[in-house]
Image 1 (cartoon, rainbow, N blue to C red):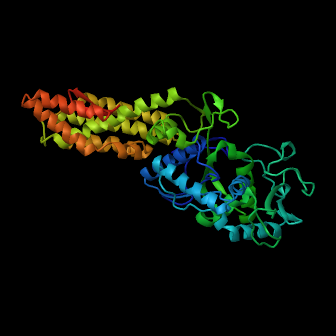
Image 2 (spheres, one colour; image 1 turned 180 degrees about the vertical axis):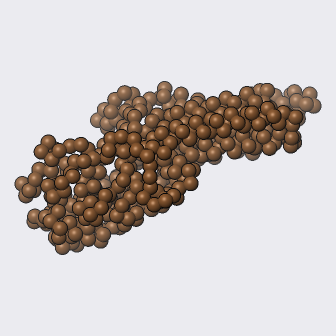
Image 3 (cartoon, rainbow, N blue to C red; image 1 turned 60 degrees about the vertical axis):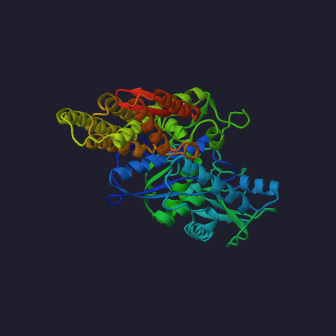
Length: 470
């Protein structure tokens, strides 16, 4: 398995620090609003990478944090006249709902910054003791000149760097590139006691502390959006490696941006969409499938046309699986005379499955992996019928579902659960088939029409009756 390592700017063979185990840290959202489509991409991409590691037999310790202390959270709390906890808890709950609806697996650990203050203070104290950080009037800065490899992730050099922090340039800083580890309390802000007075942590120190606490001093993979390469991930490396005297993360993986109708997403441009907004128009599973149709490192363009195309493509896979399930439930045939032909088909399935794994082994190329699934769909649709044996049909279903589960693309969304009772549909289809056999065409037409009123379309094919949602 090879993955692209931002640190070395090349694809590298994946070799875990511990045999058959992956320690993976993914930067999570700052929770002051609903997650937007840009947040959804790392959620989906790195969940899929995690799923593939597990498919390959690895045990994965997966950490994704919530930043629950931030200027935007504080400002929103003050504007609503509530505590910061009210805002952060509200949007953590909403983020978890969206993640679940996108079929994102729960992380092994989901730490919150405000629950890690003690550990944050301890790491800052260590950095000060080692002369990697210094305090000025209650503010603690990291001294970037104390880390000789500063800039190795982004490729930037110290003398070329602009300010890499979330605050304005402070005359108290020794160097323009130094960044804040601890900031003093301001009026109307929450604060914690520290050796440097009441205050709160800077942004970058948070993830260094949480990665160390839940995964150890050295981890296999650190991941996030490419906008985090500098300054956030660059500063994490500096803090962690100075504190721990070890390499921080062996591999750094970053996903590309999402553009909206070929423009950068921005609230000021009016093209800013939350996942919740988009889910009002298309199901969550379509959003997930759309994200995976592009390579994770490449920018992707979000448009209604592209999403609609993804929906139609996903429906092809869904209909294939629904048809297999229908045939399995309706057939009584245990064995056929076409076993030799069936063996050939299963060999071809194995070939496409091997191709799928090759694509995923090549830097998690989900776009090409989906193409392999469509090859399997085509093969299944052309070679199954009501005369196929139950064992053969079940084997086909197991094979395609194993790959779809890697990508997390076939699951019941809440929208579907609210609107469709699949068991009832299957029962009505069987009842309609019996009516046709008994030449009761009036009843058959009534069943078809009643399903159509519910948005369910029936198609009579050589492989049996296939249904789909309008």
